[in-house]
Length: 356
Image 1: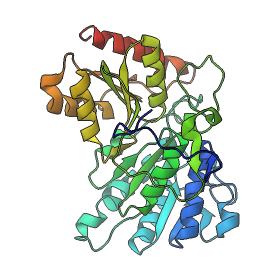
Image 2 (image 1 turned 45 degrees about the vertical axis):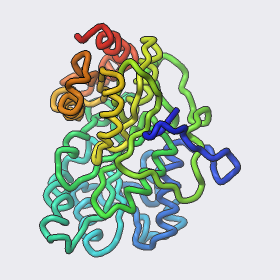
Image 3 (image 1 turned 90 degrees about the vertical axis):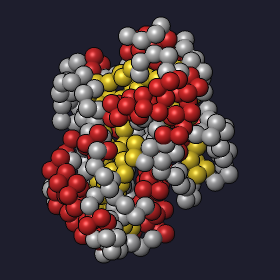
Image 4 (image 1 turned 60 degrees about the vertical axis):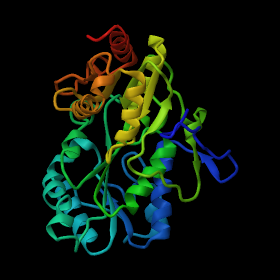
């Protein structure tokens, strides 16, 4: 496994300042450390104080840091984000949780019209150093109102940064970087990955994070810079661009297809590491984009356009998108909707044959 510079992933051995963590623990550790370091960092949302959040990401933060630093908010996503914007304007660094990404829409006006525009409209006199955390994506039988992937709605908005980790090591590092950033960051957490990597073979037993190298997480402050991709699997035949749960599905799809695919975990969608993408596609001559969200106007369309603009004369086949269907997320047909390794495998084989 290699990072964006093709160097081996550097993970300190367990016992030398690291611990085995799942994504929930890694995110909790990032919040805990930043709250201890900086009295301006605070966390709030629905049930995130005493209860520790529906997925327990904020567990014990209230007990450790007090009720003014970790507290529960009313059931009002618009109010949660509006309060965070006010706090951020006056020097605090709020980290708020929207319980599911499907519930973020009432806060969309505040995020787009206020948080994203604050630096520009004040000519730099005010910034909005805030993070909006939210679990997203399918694979847990959440149905149409607990499974959506709305990332493209935020990548379209100038002034926002959009981050999606795929493993515990990056989850901690990216959240730390997001908290320290002076601009608003939308931080999507793939809830299907909270307790272990998921390769899309839903019939198989669940695999825990403790078997993965990327679950060895520094126990102290750990930062992963925004805007740097990670090459999860080096290859020479085709480039696969993915993020979140789809990183692991893409790895499984490449193995299933028997294709020498280079799988890139984007990690942050805005800012985007276009240099790593461009170098990979120019090397392989082919590109497949994989995401959970519906295909039409999804973030894959932007990636496809960028690859075509920058790598046109190197492409040996059209760029192919593998995505969710353009329907509400179905409960009964979860695995027909969820992008699995077989669909990725079929796309890889088609691209290697010259296209679809």
